[in-house]
Image 1 (cartoon, helix red, strand yellow):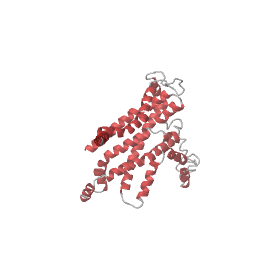
Image 2 (tube, rainbow, N blue to C red; image 1 turned 120 degrees about the vertical axis):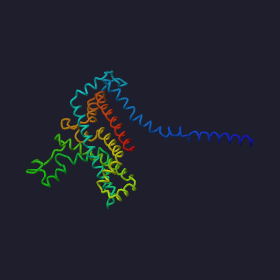
Image 3 (spheres, rainbow, N blue to C red; image 1 turned 180 degrees about the horizontal axis):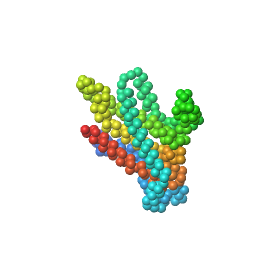
Amino acid sequence: MSATTTSGGAAVGAASGGERFFLEREKVLGPLMLLPAVIYIVALVGFPLVLAVLYAFTNVTVGDPRIDGTGDFVGLDNFRAVLNDNVFRKALRNTIGFTVISQIIVIILANILSLVLAADFKGKRLVRFLILLPWTTPIALGVLGWFWLLDSVYSPIDYALRRLDLLGPQTPLGPARNMYWLGETELARFAVLLVHIWRTLPLATVILLAGLTSIPQDIKDAANVDGAGFWRQLFYIRLPLLLPIMAVASLFSIVFTFTDLTVSLVLTRGGPVNDTQVLATWAYFKGIQGGSLAQGAAIALFLLPVLIAIAIAMLRLARRAGAD
């Protein structure tokens, strides 16, 4: 009886040990730990992307009575209709313009801010908190705050300009008491651009600040011993070493800006007269509010090849700079 019990216990122990050893294998444990992330990406990114591609080649609408909702195959008709749309071309120009201009300004300001925040001074933690605050704030709430700041009647910015004698009769900014930030084309575009800069600057600053702190102290000490001043160290040491980091920061900022829907939608709703319309908002208006899911998907698909090309170019730049 005791021999039987002992042999049975050994068999159970061996079985449990075998199961434990099986789950601890790298080939098993690695995919198992990655499985939730893969399911998340497939469900929230992969499936909608495949569905958008299918919709773009059909005539499906919001009110399609068919159960599958796929519509009839129409080939490239949706893309031809989109390319012949004046609003789409304007949205494409605005998307590229907002992205390029804002990111040039962001990368310059982020370099300046990262250099300032890397130094030691009183209140540095408070300054870092204030700079990071726009990124931690939900974008919809942040844009609503800007919507109030740029109000055509109660704008505190206009009030400050009037108090400084910069706005009003016989002033540099004109005789009106308000600037009508969101009602005039150039001012509305400037407002959207300003909010994009305000939103993406904290992320780029933090990334570059992390890159600055990773520069070896030996290199800085050697430069100081050689008598290199601030500007020489900036252009010959800091910026070349930060180039891969700047590429990564630019990649994130470009993706966020190029695909953004909230800023133009909440701030101007694409106005005045579609002058601040971007691809994301026009896809929303055409596909959701207009009911043409097919044309909305076709507009949204124009974002994909551009972003893939930008990502490949930025990652190659970062790898080449890192190798040098």
